[in-house]
Image 1 (tube, helix red, strand yellow):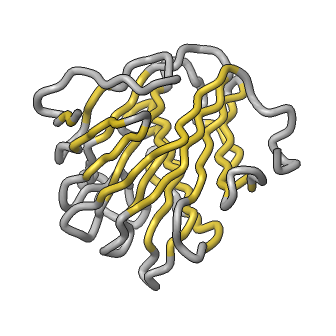
Image 2 (image 1 turned 45 degrees about the horizontal axis):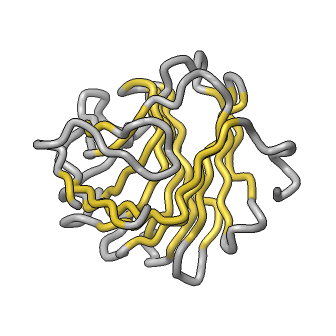
Length: 209
């Protein structure tokens, strides 16, 4: 079944206990089949406030996010991206406001390398490339631990590499979900499978578990 942000108010994924609601522009088309979420972004879509750019020029992107509540949690997905243009990506998104958000991305670098990338935005965005892959899917994971957040990535779904540990200040009301982006291209399709949500955080954020 397919949804478009212009016609649907929410979307439900098996195992995720809260609905995902559409927001942002250009619209992001979504479909769910057998627990797999497929997103197709619009052209020139991105969430990034360039620290060297125009403060008034904030790009946007269609996204699907929901409210997990105020308890600690872990959200995991395996991401496969139809890379074409530089910065095409499938993203796990943490969103508090238009100037407080963070992205955990499987992104196509300008060197045409699939790369694990993180972005943390506090009024303006930073941009940190973590590691390149040989292609194929990449597992991504967002963890909330009180006011703190952790971003992990894994190439095999077993050993998790910590990419970022950070805070955006007060975490109440934080939304989490999924995004496909194509900042320089005509659109990008990202497939999220093995989606899992659980209450609580890993016992250690730094030991690979």
